[in-house]
Image (cartoon, rainbow over all chains, first blue to last red; front, side, top):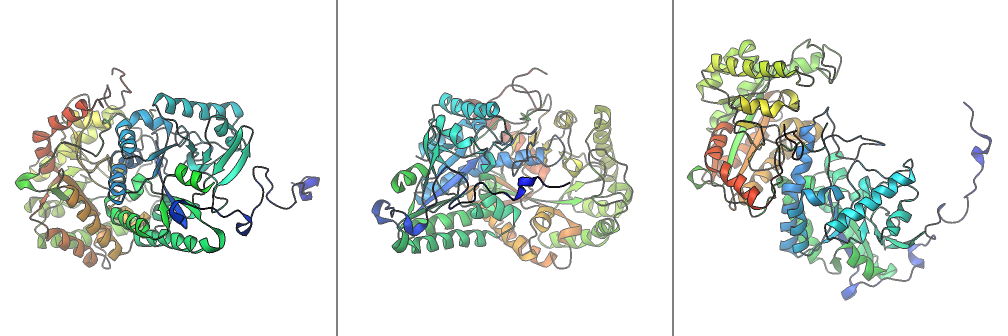
Length: 303
Length: 317
């Protein structure tokens, strides 16, 4: 098979990225951000609450953590469900005892299923973000507009029905189509947790106005580090604390910066990992110059 | 195929009514050695091969043979030293292949529960009649070998059908180890019987920790201690359950058994607060005292969903 003639033509070969959502801007070129109290670093903890159904299509790819053995894969269904029944409550307790305000990114399909957990999250004053419909409704390059619009609109409607008006959106598996930003902004979301891009929130242009990309560090994803890569809990903790120290140390040059990282209830909320969760929360909340907060709070402060 | 198995209702791990184990103990601790038989030439199940490699898989097969010939005895003697009884997850054909092991465990008053006939015979695609035959065979075979009626079930290689739980409940099993949603037991929604989910574990199961999680022997001992400490502390609010599922072909390896002993030593040193027991004893205590309490709490919170397992949300069977 031969390649098309224009394979070596480069229509978007110019300064900056080959997309028009935002302009290129390096750290020294941006207007320095200030956070309340002169904090050098804003950290957001993202807790994904995911519904892993027993019968996923697995299309266009299997969401990380989805069913793995033939139906009915009760083994994976129930180990994931553990997070929403047990692990999330352990995380809530740890947040409470360290005074940390986190952001829970929730699949719409869970709102009705785990309402007592949603109520406990709200009672403790945490933020709720939308995490799409469920783990089998993937936004991706090959999804048709009608289907994706339905995914977004249904998600908004289900949250509304539950009396929730989330500002922040995280896509299932943090996967997007070319239109996802336009659709979520049209549906009233003004913060997106899928784009890492910078160390401050980045204003991205859409057909319906601007949406802020709040950076969540892919490389610190707990599911990836602890279960795919088998890092120890001590190494997981140390990497998070090192990221915080290093980023904070740049404040004199670049102003305040922010990042988010995940704590997934069925993983971080295991009994044998809770010592590390508590250690991370205690150390971060005691670090001079570190502000732990929800994504909307940090985005507003840093935009 | 259903999205949600509806085998149990959502029951948040917060403000649950208190469970107290006998003697006011906070944590019920049990050890489940899997005593398994993998056939040299198993028949083919279209859903999954008997061995991950082409049959015969000499390395895999002989390591499991070693597990019964050498490994089991090492592990049993270790548990003897800490005065702990095992609850055996048994491929019941072991009663025919290695009766000496069954006899030694029975003498120690260990518990036996069914882990199917062979670990190379999966439930996928079984008719109801075949599933019933497996349960009848399990009950009959263990009773003939030990004089005891089995009360627990862990599906062979964790393979199920939609009717598995209704069937084991009908056969008067008390507990299933197949569901991993909690650190406390909970009634299972079956058409008949009185079946509970028993906290077993994949997270601290030696197959997962040494295998998929690639833990060193010392790291495994460390996470066992931490897991135990956390659940013991939570048990002050309401009694928790911790199980260590084991496989002698893994844990009894010469580089692993002594580091593993450290974890047992740690657990045994807390025995004033820990009920060191068996699966059936936990199930019996729970079914007598906490079955109604749990269901009442779920109802009080408005969390009851109609129907039973795999009968959908509210669909009549």
